[in-house]
Image (cartoon, rainbow, N blue to C red):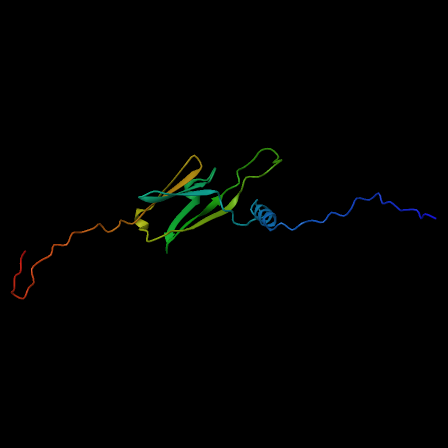
Length: 152
């Protein structure tokens, strides 16, 4: 005699696979969309023979709301992206507001007095000149000082 087979109409249980990269990215995005945590803006670092150039996206940020410091071999850019006053209802938000910070370790010594920063069209540009390298110097070989002059 055959026994009846019971069939389930329920969907099989899905086993979620742990993805550490996804978890990190979701945590970063969730923590940076206006809940008071510090945001790290997108930025590029370019190196030329004369300088390092750091460009950061800071849309809508005014000069007075940005601080740029160089100390102990590190560039620190910090400030605040302020929420603008709105008349309507905000239906969707992906732009960041609140405090931001960028920290970049600089290779070698930097003269803070020569660092220059400007902001234009929502892009902050920090120009960090490299230290001048010692130029080769030809050393003249002189005569021995004890009285015996041997010349070629």
